Image (cartoon, one colour):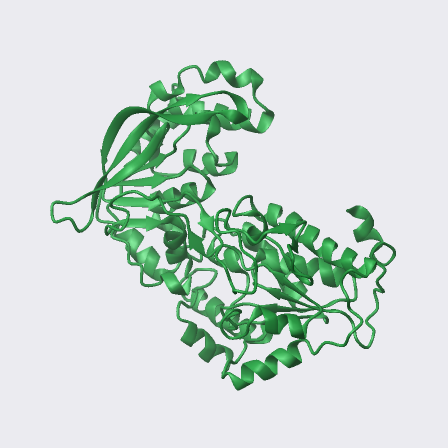
Length: 476
């Protein structure tokens, strides 16, 4: 890897100066995978890159997925902005690939097309009652408080006392934190005002975070767990019986899992110190993990319209190590709750009939980022490997795809000898179809206006929620 970065011209057979006609690559998706792929391509080669994004605004899940109280994670936007402002990189927002322009048309205009459009779909629970009012996917709930235009009308009912979150990954803990955080903390973030107003009036006082396996398999990171443990105004409520025998396994655990489990045990069963005890006694809100539970049915209210509870199958674990699996015991448990949030994963969707797609794995079938049986077509990010990992995982994955593409140019397996029209050809098609792309400088107008609106409320920004308003500001 370092060799490609340190001496790309030698490894890939490419000049680092810009010839009259450099290879043209387009990237579909303006989120982390798209920007990291572009970053590597423009940094180590003479390739020209165009990024196409369906929304008028860039940055994908960094803008719409990262929790409002994690501003440090969003600092990567500064790096993406540098990439977008590079002489050989252009951003084209408000372009829906697969609708406004096909992948085949992009392939005609560019030497290579990289699909980096992420995972817009939700994995479903597949249980009765999933469609009742009061049941949401974590993806939509996160989109609601983070200002994703398609989720602005969600209006979740927060009038219940208990919420159940299914899944125990970082997104589940983000949602739990948003439901329980003091409004005084949230109002200093870039959370949308309508979500802030709703959370200020919320009646939710207890959040249960449910998983099908045990404490040793919990999927969150220690950072997220520590934030829950330290969340002001809250106390942990867990079942001591679910942690029997866990302390004895600590010695055999790898360090990251050991530290995570130690913190979990401390929160769950250790006698708290005086300061922590005082915090817990004052707390008006509570949270807790529930292990070895799987959803069977969302239980309806008497009018059969909304969620009133959830029926859980009680599991036991079989096997050990990585091969451990949850098996139903036959026991069931009903939990009363008015809010159910399913955080069991995102799912990529097919973008265009011309692109191969594995519907079972919900990814584009590929070998090291090369789309199978389709020359000149590549993929990176979640659509390449599935919706797993953190932003750094996506960075490495995207750099790998960029390296693969550059190696193919260097070896001659990707033909860049013909002259391609690039964005000029695509712009002509879009103009005929009445589509007006948003440039990066147009986005900067939106950015400035959002920042201005945020300043009036003491926030970093107030996000626009309406695509029409975004376009109006971009074109002012």
